[in-house]
Amino acid sequence: MTDAGVLIVGASQAGAQLAGSLREFGATCPITLVGAEEHLPYQRPPLSKAFLSGQVDADSLLLRSADYYADQDIAVVTGEWIDRIDLDATGGCATSASGRTFDFDRLALTVGGTPRRLPVPGADLGNVFYLRDLADATALRASLDAAERVVVVGGGFVGLEAAAVANSLGKDVVVVEALDRLMARAVAPVVSQFYREAHERRGVRVLLDTGVVGLTGTSTVASVDLSDGTSLPADIVLVGIGLVAHTGLAEQLGLEVSSGGIVIDAHARTSRPGVVAAGDCTVLRSHEGLLRIESVANAIAQGRAAAATLAGIDDPLSAVPWFWSDQGEIKLQIAGLSVGYDDVVVRGEPDSEQFSALYYAADQLIAIDSVNTPRDYMAVRKILEKGGSVPRGAAADLEVQLKSFLPARV
Ligand SMILES: Cc1cc2nc3c(=O)[nH]c(=O)nc-3n(C[C@H](O)[C@H](O)[C@H](O)COP(=O)(O)OP(=O)(O)OC[C@H]3O[C@@H](n4cnc5c(N)ncnc54)[C@H](O)[C@@H]3O)c2cc1C
Image 1: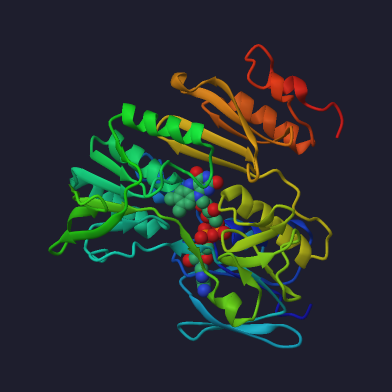
Image 2: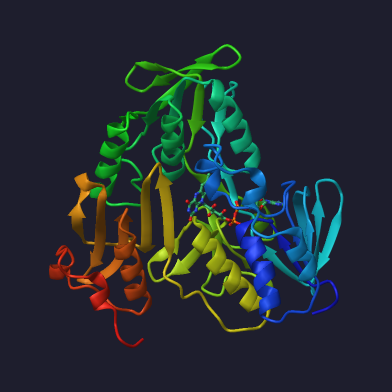
């Protein structure tokens, strides 16, 4: 490498991990982490949980202190949106919207994404919120205080977490989901059904198979018009209908972009030598096809893999994916990938609010969703990491400890 070093565009979970891992792998080159937000990299998960409910403040969200970056000689540049990147034979130069330039030898894109907008009339009214960054969460938190009726559009993780917080604050909450079940992209029907009932038991209304056709109000939203011709009164609307990855820079560079993300391999390499990508902006080419995984664990694992690649170390992605979602006091923990499952075994009683769903493909255990059962989750995560399984016939038997199936050797 020359003196320009590594430029990481996007200063959040994946970018911060990539920078730190580069130093851990022994890289001595200059590292610049540039991001559009005004903050040092911070954790997003609390934005729909403890930060939204007022239990923690913004300072506690930082992933690392300013001292850490200084000690590691990582230059963090905040408040700069990169809108153009030029590559040449030895590296390239990125230019921000304000005109600052950043030379580099190697480039990493960790640019995440932006919330999918609600494509209906009235969506630009006041008090219509999205929840992706600290600014969004701060604005939502401030408006939530004065609101009585909250409509959440989208029954995915972020929407349901925020719905649980609003409900716990005594708001009248309705979740509107266009599909016939909650979190349909991620979990089996039995888990969706459990969550519907659990939220309803706590007083949240859940409307499935229901689209939003418009929002009405004068300057701020007053009601949500539904596909069945009815409407819901609303002081606040929170839209949580997915993420659109930032692929603009990748497209500009001619990188392969497919299924809504920058295509990478297990080494976090893009289609262009010298350019890696990690986190929510990517789709991973794998045996299961192109995988889009939006999670902290994925951002960490891919950030690390990208750092290894830039440092010339052969250390591809190998970790079993994991994820969590706290919806009120109900903790969902997921290990493995359930894509392509052909059977689900339920362990425990969903009505007790403590159970697991174990996913199988051709008799092999491939994933688990655990609800308030961390012991099952940890056992299965370790079993999957060691390439083991749990016999399908034994999975539902609460007398059988799942950890007894942990392979003795890798
Ligand atoms: C409310 C909420 C709750 C969540 N809860 C959980 C959870 O419970 N468990 C879990 O596993 N995951 C959760 N996630 C997901 C997790 O936070 C993300 O998967 C993770 O943040 C992805 O990190 P990333 O670095 O890839 O992308 P991001 O965090 O999106 O960061 C990308 C950064 O790049 C910057 N950027 C983009 N383009 C440019 C550009 N051109 N120039 C400069 N900067 C740019 C953006 O401003 C942003 O700061 C949650 C996410 C949200 C929003």
